[in-house]
Image 1 (cartoon, protein in one colour):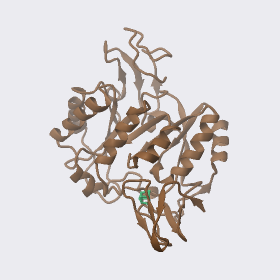
Image 2 (tube, helix red, strand yellow):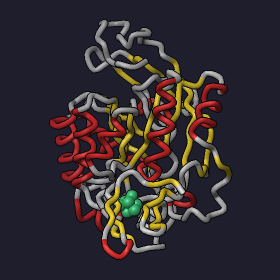
Image 3 (cartoon, protein in one colour):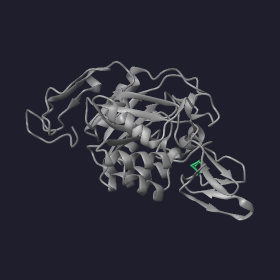
Image 4 (tube, rainbow, N blue to C red):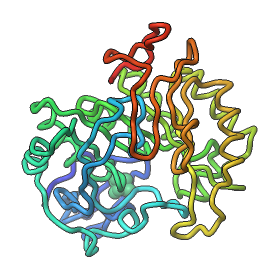
Length: 335
Ligand code: SF4
């Protein structure tokens, strides 16, 4: 048993988990909503600590992170469970199952994870991804603490559904985040994710306030979260609260899990891209073969900085410090 870091003890051996905004009250023997935390005799335990469902070395662009050490490789790891339940989840085989699932393929302790990371050629660090890392909080903290001692970078790909205190703790150890901003209405979040929007917006602002690298991803669901006015309001909010240089990835949806909608038409992605570019300097289209919309351009002079195809990165217009070779503007902080 690995005792959870954030919970309160209640009467009759019940507990309240305070890790994420669900704040589940869990009776003795029962699991929380994420299927990753269990009340064991009045003690809240993380049931997924060191239990691994997926581990691989990925291009950092696949997270996606486009402005954080572009072209590098990162050891990526995930377990099972999630504290949201999106009907369109693209990773539901591991996110919407429990810790008794056969998809949990092996046990890897934080020490062992660091040893693998150190042995992996050309690897810059560890990315906690595939399922929701928040619900494996203790493993992320312990592994990241060791990663920092080993000069490894740490990345988290998350739905941003976490309470402020545990997030503050994570911010001591995580270098870069990709946060899903799945839509810009609470009605959408409640109906399609079984969560709420406000905590996600607060997480994004808290990460930014701490000065950590942050990129945002929106999976574009045709007819569901693609209202142009709402999307424009989201882009304005990002620009005003997080800054016009915030990276926004628009990702193409394919039918998965419980939502059987048609794949996002390319024209819809192009049209939302044009709206976003009125407010944000760095907008990308992902999950679709489109070179122009995946390339990085200098917001100052328009020069092509980085060419991207699925697996090919060419840093043709940028120096090792992240400066545009044409106008010398510093565009990337981490390169
Ligand atoms: S982390 Fe899991 S158990 Fe804890 S409040 Fe969130 S959903 Fe509930």
